Structures are given as structure tokens and as C-alpha cells.
Image (cartoon, rainbow, N blue to C red):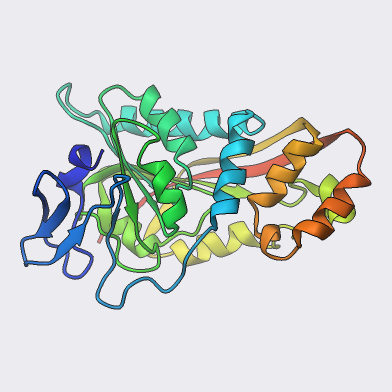
Length: 290
């Protein structure tokens, strides 16, 4: 809930602290800005210009929830959680500490909830630009606070407050990550690799993985973040039926480029089940000293 992370949140306009008012029906900053908390439990923390994008649609969010709940990406979930555990352990926090986690582009909160379950006494902010995702985030875990915000803007998070950040197939803001990380904090980034879901690309015409994604990530991070652990290559087969394949496509950018009618036509030509390979790379970063 937002109450669990209120001390980590900040006014997106000026970075001042936020406090819950009127039984947490709104958050008010020290500078006087007020942000209403939706009845579903999330809050939109955007600056004066508001949000420039809408993020994932309701259908994409539902498809993601369906696909992840089937467990096909379990090795990815475990890898991210294990890295977050290692980071918190390396930070050597006091026994009384409540490790502060942040997931950017958190979607439905599936990864964040698994990590919160695995790290004792932790609490986390799930940040996504999609209101539809935030409604799921708000109920993904009792110690998670759901925030609608744009990762490209100033993050509505207090400077030096976050022990571990996770980014799973989502955009990154290295400068802001550097700002919000605690002194021993680190970032975990999971990036799709060439060959990810390739067995589906030709028959369904879905969007492929851009070349050079990891290289561009390191270029963008230069001066803000530096590698803190050796990268880990992850690859595993999945047996997917047609319903799982439809959910996978529905949660991806391809959902914006293929009509439901055309997707159904292409799906009908697939076998009942397919072996599909998941491929990604996990990288870890720490903040560059200023």
C-alpha cells in the first residue's frame, strides 16, 4: 500500500516530501501540491505538464497477467528476484531496516510481488505509466505502493532512498536511477536478446528484438551507472499452447500492430502446441560516484 512507501515518494514537480492526508485519499507535498489517490489505491505523480503517453492498454495488461500467471517466464522471475536478494544482502542493511525496492515499468506487479515475498521486511514501489497496469499493481502485494509516472521524467522518488531497482523489458532512466539509489544500491536490468521467441516471429509476423539493445543500454548509462556484476545469459524452452501464444503476443508491442482478426487467422494455422525459446540477458549496475 502507499502507506508503506510514503517516505520514499516525492513531489514530481520539485522533489519535496509527500504525506498522506484525509485517510490517504490524497498525498500532499511540503510545497503544497496535492495528488488524489484513486479508489483502487494507486496515485498518479506527474508534473505540471501531465503524462505524455498512456502506456499499455487494458487488453495488453490483461494478456500480461494471463501469460505470467501460467509460469512460462518463471526462470526470468527467479533470476530477477535472486539478483535483488543479492543486492540487498550486499548492502548489509541493519536488522531493523526495511529494504526499499523500486520496479520501473512494473506492469501488473508480478515480478515485484515475487521479490517482496522473497526479501523479509521489504517494501516496494511499482511504477508504470499505464493506469490499467496501476490498478493491478495496487493489489499485487500488501507492501507494494502503485504509482503512475513516466520513467523519462523526474521520478517521484526521494533521492538516495532506494536499495534495489528492477527493470524487466522496460525503459530506463540512468540519470534518475543514479539519483534515487542509496549509497550501496544497485539496478537489475533484464533485456530480451536476439532469438527471443523467434519461433513465433515468422508464422505470426510479430516484432523482433532490436539489434544492439544491450550496447545502447551501456552507452546511455555512461557517466551515471557502471557495471557491478558479470552479466548473465538466460535461455530456456517453453511449451506453449495457442492460448499462451495469444497471451504472449497480446502483452507485447506486436499487439499494437496486428488486428485481433488477423492474429486469430494466423493462430489457427499453428500447431496445438509449440516449443518456443525465451532468451534474455541480466545486467547489474551501481551508481557512478558524483
